[in-house]
Structures are given as structure tokens and as C-alpha cells.
Length: 141
Image (tube, rainbow, N blue to C red; front, side, top):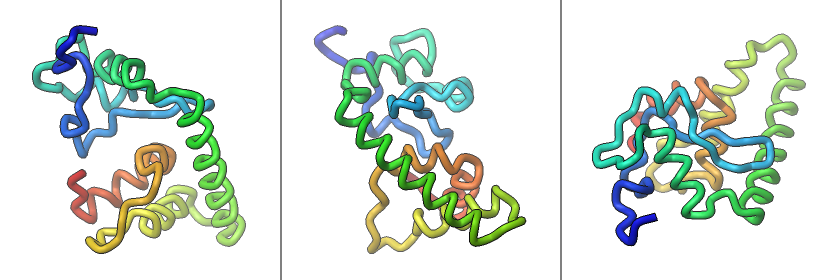
């Protein structure tokens, strides 16, 4: 990588509120989300596309290190248990409504409340339900 990383890696302030640019591999490694990256242009990107920029960011910032991946796997396991519990409590409920209820609980628009750890991972796992809720509450990153 060049000595000046501008345009070669994604700076935190360049991560858009929407669309979501990251997804996660089963081992917890962040990856470029092809759907989100395809429709988003990052000004000053020196790579051929946004997906490459996101992938290079993960690589150069070591966001896929074992420690972070292990912590993401633990967080995802807890989330999956919670999703399973909610589904058992609401037999016959529309799965997207279960995820939306969880998104509403985890992602509050209360300005005094801190955002949950592993926000991006949880947002990705809850998918369209999380995106809908975040838009509804006026989430702006």
C-alpha cells in the first residue's frame, strides 16, 4: 500500500449510512457486500470498484484477525440464540417480523443510549428488517 492510504482504504467517515458495505463470512471475517458495494461510489477510491476498496480495507487494517473473528463468532452465536428464542416464543410469526422486533430492541433511536457492540455484524444478520428499522428511526451513522 502507498504511504498515504487515502483512496486505498476506506476511512471510517467514508463508510456510508446506507447501503451496508460489509457482510460476514462464517468464521467472522468481514467481507465486501457485493449488493451494497455495487451501487455505491466512494469519492477518491483508487481501486476499480467499491468492493475492492472494502476488501483492501479489511486486509490492510487486519479486520479479519483471529481475535476479532473469534469475538464476532461469539457475538453472532449469542444473536442466533436470541433469534431462536424469539421464534420459539412466537410460533407461526413471520420471520421478518421477528427480526424487525429484535432490530427495534437492539437499535434504539434514544440519543442517551450507546449503540450495541458488533453493530455492523448484527445489522448484517438482521438484514432487510434492520435496514427498514434504521431508516424508520432516521439512522445517520
